[in-house]
Length: 342
Image (cartoon, rainbow, N blue to C red; front, top):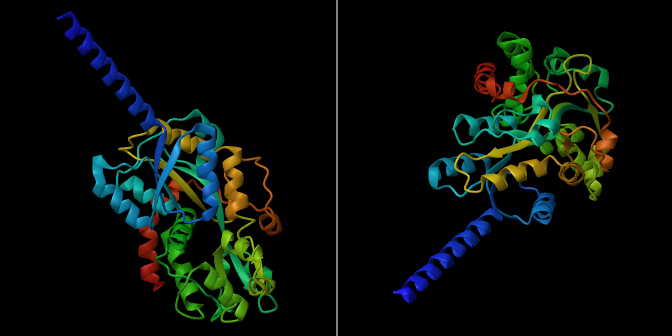
């Protein structure tokens, strides 16, 4: 009997040790679902693993596909963190009940209050600026977003689709600041000024302005910075023909959008997930966002070495809370539809 008791005790201790080892192994893994498709993000994951020993396993996909996947996986989802671009998409994850609130003194100290919500955080910024054809439009003619609806620009404005999240977020900010009626009036004015029906992405709008297909457009800054840093002669020639204006510098400031993320409600490695978000707010990670992918840091005082961002210069950014962009997202689409901004 004594030998049986010893054997059972040994087996119990072994099982406990194995369970503990499995738990420790689980804690050294982070499952990331990311809609950021940038090779430079590899440095982010490597830096996190180097500091913590936690291995990042990721699945990349399009924004809506990832959200639907997480919802379908439900309580069995292996995903710990969602990373994506645009406040509207992060808001969608919140509205679908996919995220969980996070309390972190590090995140609260480093990320400005208007760039975070209870369950998701911004980690990088991109601004939506006005671009124009040098020699065709004067920069003083397009100082503000409101100028895009000025009759003087009739037949000169290019745009991507009004249903794209970048434009929806811009419209949401206009609604938040000026109200729905004025926002719709602005949208109708822009539609009247279209040089062609909306199509393509931001880079297509930049090339269209440079080629003279239109004379004015809006673009996120990191697309401009990417062309500025390109080794291709045609990209550099494109940027030589295009001027950039920081809009609304005497008013609310240039509209900004974000790249960010949050911890998922059913995250199996919640502690690792919070650590990952905290790492993304570190000086090291913030420099990766800026120097690697031409985005501005959200943390003040981080020193970066990106010649394109430096060339674009300093600007006044709109301090509208990112939650407000989410609040008016649905209304923004309705306004665009009524204005015929397809």
